[in-house]
Image 1: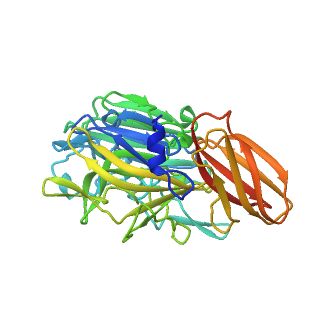
Image 2: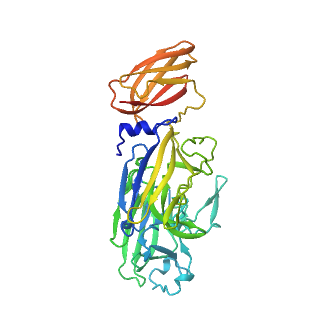
Image 3: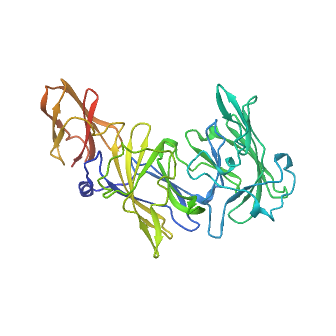
Length: 426
C-alpha cells in the first residue's frame, strides 16, 4: 500500500469527497515488461511478467472468450494469430503451409472489450436462431454453440506465430461445463500437446492464463474485486493501424468516460452529466504522444470511472517515463462514495479541519434526527452517532481522539439525504 505523509495530505485536500493523490505505476520496458493490476482505493499493485503467457481464457462458464497476449515480445517479434483459410478442425492432421500467410486474415483482440478476443473474431453472423422472441447468435468465432449439448464445438484451426518467431497450429476442440479442451502442435503435427483449461480453478478471476512455450497454466491475476485498472502493453488502433502501446485498461466492473477540453482538470468534477461507456481502453494510451524525443501529456483531459455500487473516481494522467521504467504518473480522487455525493444535500460545515481530538459539525437540519458516520479510506465505518435535532442550524460535537491519524470521510445523513466531507485527523 502506498503511504502518504501528513504534510502531503494537507497539500492535496480538495473540495471533493477525498483528496487528490499523486501516484505512479511502473511496468518496465523492453522484454522485461510487467502488467500491473491496480486497486484505486488503496493503491495496491499486483505485478506479473507480461511475457509469461500466450493465451487467456475467460473463467465465465457462459463465455467463449479466448484472448492472445498481443503485448508479448519486443520490436523484433510479437505474438500474432491468423485463421487458417484452407480447412477446419477436421483437417487437423494436415501440414499447414504458411508461405502465403500475409494474405490470411490476421486476428486481433478487440481493444475495447475483454469479451472479444482474437479467437472470437471470425464469427459467422448469419448463424442464428430465434429463442423466446430474441435472435441468438450461435457462432463464437472458434466454435458454434450446440443447443442440444450446451457445449461450444470448435470448427476452426488457427496459426500462431510465437514471440520467438516459430509457428504453432491450435485447435479449440470444445468448451463444456466451463472447461476448454484444446490442442497445439507444430505445423506438421509434431510435438502435439492436448490440454484442458478448467475455469473452476480460477474462481473469482476474470481470466486464467496459459503459456504455450512452457505448456503451463498460470494464475497471476488478482481476484476481480481486488483490481480496478491494469497497466500493461497491448495492441490498439493508432491512426488506423494496430500498434503496440503502453496504456491503462479498466476492469469489467467499471465504466468510464473521457472529458476533453477541460480548462482546469484539477477542479473539474462534473461527472453526473457525462455519458459513461464500458470500452476498456477509454483511458488507454492516447493521453500521451511522443514528440521531440519526449512524451507530451494532454493537459485538458479528465477521466471518470464508476462501478455499479456508485463509487466514482477521477483520474488525470500527468506523466509518462518510457525506456526501461515504463512509469505512469497520475492523480486520483474519489468524488462519490457508495452512491453518496455532496450534490443536492444540506449545508454542512466541519471544523476544525485538520483536527486532533474533536470535531464540530454544523449543518442546516431539515428533520428531527440525524446520523453521523465516519469512514476510513478503505470505506470501513470507524465511528457512528445518531441524535435528535431541531429544524435549523444544528451543531454537534464528535470525539475523534481514538482514531489513528489520517484522512476520514464524515457523512451527515438525514432521511437518506447525505453529505460527505473529508477531514484530516492528526
